[in-house]
Length: 575
Image (cartoon, rainbow, N blue to C red; front, side, top):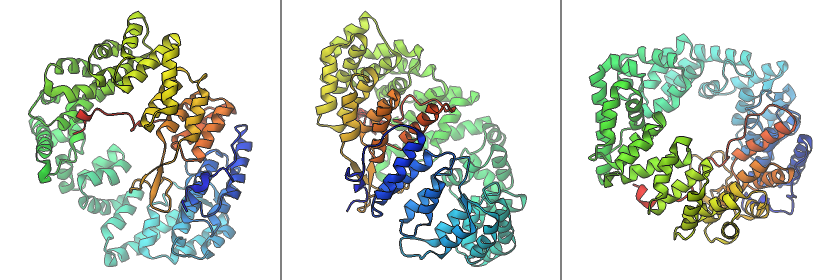
């Protein structure tokens, strides 16, 4: 039986959006009737309880889930992990810790994992700390070191953390050095977490074993710029590696290589990446720091001439130059459209011009209107579709705009037609255009086309098109794909597949979030409970609750649909 079968309405009544207390009571009641075997649904309900309960009024319920040996490991973990974003941490008594420690373990539940999670994430009562120390002494030195990477000095149990650090420094560290195969990584991880003067050598030793991209991902992202500089200065070898991988601030790299030397290094990186693209069948590796090279070329004043030269270097592979185009857009936004207008004169630049148009259309500003109009007059469907997108976002209007929209209603490209229809509905409530949008939203064969129609209905006719939004957010079938290593926070079924948010449900959810009536939010909550829209909508619902209670809340984003992977990318762009 699928682990996400719990979307069955037999025990999943429609939610009501009223007060915070009533919503939490509904979720707790739902948790009581969802079978233990449906761990995906139970985990999601637990996460929502934690997200909607910033003051900890339902901590007893969450702690009960965490201590319940009959619950699956991932649900028990979620009961604690989902509270970590709150200011108020959950507490654990000595009795609760003893109950957790005495729980039977089997092949699906690791007692060590749960105890470690309790010690690192929950606030222990004072009389629970002696028992916690007894439990820690039963662990191996390597297991205690792993916990110490999570039991931070400024965490919920600082006294226990400090005691464990002293234990590691005086006893566990030498034992790990003498006996453990992963001694450098184990002790280096503790050194990274605690970052005390006496641990710097251990951190340097670990850093020297890492490839530059792993060093950036595992170590540097945890360090401040001053700490990064101190790490590199502690080891000439590590400093040399950092210079070669462009990991240092530009002034430090200029000190090490000289301005001309750094320019040569940046140019070499681009040519190496281009060569790897040209020799793809031979498996030539790409440099891992291409994006860093592109960023430096775009932001370092002395590199601007080389940057502009490389942007126009037709001998460089298109994907390599695409990285430069993105750097141009990110760091010199005003220049990007002007560059694209010049670059379009050369056919080899076409994929890069499309990249600029797509970037502009997805985040247009007022000064982009002329650029977008230029492409709206194009004969290429991809250009017209992206130009329409940008101009719709900018709220374009006027007689010429209406005339062009009417012309584009006859396009053979569905994306062009739907966006032109959206413009006409917004401009003059065009009945035929509205009928096309609604018809595609309801009847289109492809989910991605239904999603596109729902997206624009939500933008131009959300109030009157609620029935179509409700249909999309509620009736869309569950999507599946094979799970990957990045799906730790997703909802898996028993065949190892992950339930992916459904495109039309995502777009409908974004529209309901903007509409924001109690019925809209109840439908949105229902959709999230059925895993048809992404976790960002749980945050959106929490913001609605805060505003409903008069609390300060960050503004809702324009849309919670963070990455519309279902929007067509022109085939010529994929290389």
